[in-house]
Length: 625
Image 1 (cartoon, rainbow, N blue to C red):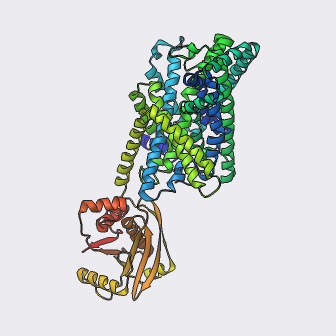
Image 2 (tube, rainbow, N blue to C red):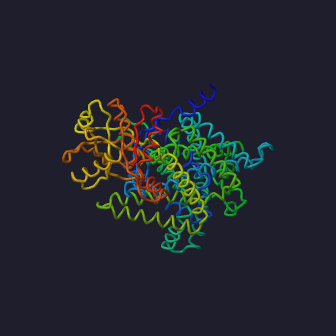
Image 3 (cartoon, helix red, strand yellow):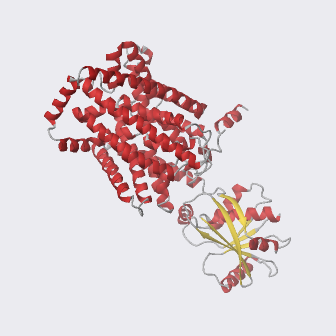
């Protein structure tokens, strides 16, 4: 009984989401979902000013301005188009899937899912490790929590527990954390700006230093453009913003899209203001040596100002807020994974059905996050390359998808320019930090192996979701009267009455069927074999004196089995089907079945029937000659 209750709790939401078009529930106002994505996006304010100064020095405000311009005029319009094209949370991956058919498209999607998983998992582990680093270096931290590894694992466990409880709790917590964090940052920023206004000579000193190092404006622009890839982590919130679209409330699909665009615009606007303001005040007010490794402002520039201008009490409150939002930054990543993975792998037959439920996936993702944390020893810097690679590859794929979608319009040149910007940014990041690509490749390889093993183990499931018969097909079944339906499968091709005469004569002779016993022919034309599930439509046609059933399906044997089961239910008689053995290597036939949807149909049809119909008295009978 206890096991049953646990199983019911674990799989309580198995119905969600149902395939790529099914919306997730429950839904929430767009501003609260913005806070869920914002725990990742806005939390970068804690370290982005320091990253900008270490990368650009006194040019930090101008380099950050380039980042903001790219955010507002490249990434934001780009992801608004992505939201319009994939309103159920599939993102740019769904747009690219439609451009690549069959197995090529599936493999391409798996590769992008690998990068997405890299992005989201590393977001969880890196943010938790960063929060743990802030915690263990605090002088008030208890000694028994002095291990960064232990604190990181505890924070990840708390995050997992929140998601096991449900989305509502995660979003409510995110709203509180984001609101408090933004208010504290606004207070610190306003106080810092006031200090600069009170001491205008600080700006003069900064300008003198700036123009002594970079005397020409063209040189400043060129250097800032070259430095942009190092600041690109400030773009991390867009893919997550699209991935959580199913959580956004709206009266209809168009309303959800409009609300998602509000989310993206508001988040980008808030972040842009803070990025420019914090970069400017930290560059002016913090000594350069404080940004260096081991310096008081390293990785915590705004916290440095909070302590400097408000004292220890307010500074400690800011530290606590920073630790909490970093610890919870993985919430948006977890939400993205829970809305992205179930819309692809189960539909491809590359994950078990329980992968449609949220709670089992939370346990799987938390296990992976624990493994990654152990692998990187909870080190923040070691995970930075993988994080940046995952973010930038997804943005680049979105830019390419949008460019291809508008290729025949006048927007193609603008979209192409945006795509080239992100291709350059991604290439430079990989060139400077190749370890990120290596880690992403490990995730991709793992997803590929698990996916194809799952596909192979599920290959003999009854993958047809329903059978529809045309009126001609129904007439053919009724014409058999009280006799069982007997079917001869025949290859779909240009078929003549003579071809069917010969096939029927052969089966009657080998199987000993008398002439008065009626038979039907069945032709199944194979379509895209990479698809997993399908609803089967069957039509009837007369060729000479023969009755022929026609169907189109990605999996021939499964479709034959589904039709036989349907016939037994409709007629009340167990149908018979008569195969001929297929010549060829049996191993090659297995691979033809797995990847081409065909092969030696007789044993595979029998196996599908054996699994789908446990009652042998009602199981359709397979004959082979």
